[in-house]
Length: 363
Ligand SMILES: [Fe+2]
Ligand SMILES: [Fe+2]
Image (cartoon, rainbow, N blue to C red; front, side, top):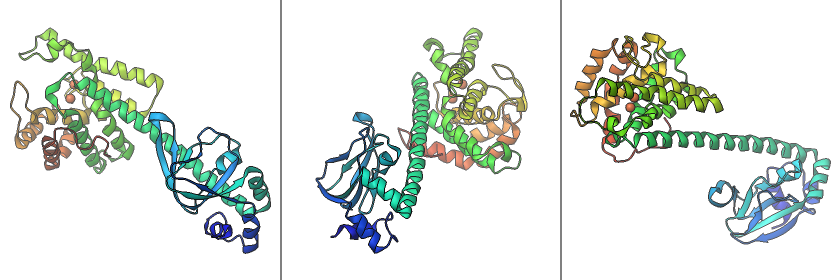
């Protein structure tokens, strides 16, 4: 097929007029590439713009073990313009996924074309701004995934000391998220629970007992009743955990990590002021911690422990009703009690699986 036919199919050149396209087509050269060949290499200096006539290519970022696919390109797609316009090294590697025919335009010719064809220049600019936006999004997403991965692995590391609790972290995460979702629809909490709050509690709730890493095994795994002194030591898991979150906040003061600190330090506070470590009362206890307390309690009762059998949903629900206004914020308890079957459903989901079903699922 003639080069101008291919150009006519590309978004960059449509509507340019036959004469212009014929003139531009003369500047392009056709090149055959074999499947598996690298067309451009990330970091290289860019000298050519490419338009795919036939075949497919993969866009890759990074090298070695961290190399990942950013996307696929097919007939009509162009690539390589970024390095030409911005005079920067290639931002990604492009490799032929099948045998391909590529139409190539050298840098000088590309620049002249930008000068001569206003429409072409406008489209290239629009393309560049889209690419820029996409590459920023990719960076942010990578960063977000890195945060999530680190948070959950840290929480698992702390939890691994306490083997009996199984999927506790994931269940508690889901209970917190479920509660927050229902709260966001309740006029009493609506303004305090925007979508970002729900997202944040999903990610950071597994961290609540992170401070337990500092509690000695002989106390953490003790089968009998704890002495007063031992209990005092257990209580410090809240403040020790908060201390490590302070370190995180020192480097990265994100709302999400502030919430993590709130629930790490506050998840054993009680609404009636009888909790620890501070004895905060009522709404002085941060909201995330008030949610966490009820989620943690529900899960503790539903789970079998060395010193007790697992409670049924009904037994647990009546224990929570009993504790509303004492241990728990009565308004949050009321919302939870209106949706107990959903909590039971989460519990059952995890009971049927040895490993969490959706480590990477969205909340
Ligand atoms: Fe705790
Ligand atoms: Fe817990």
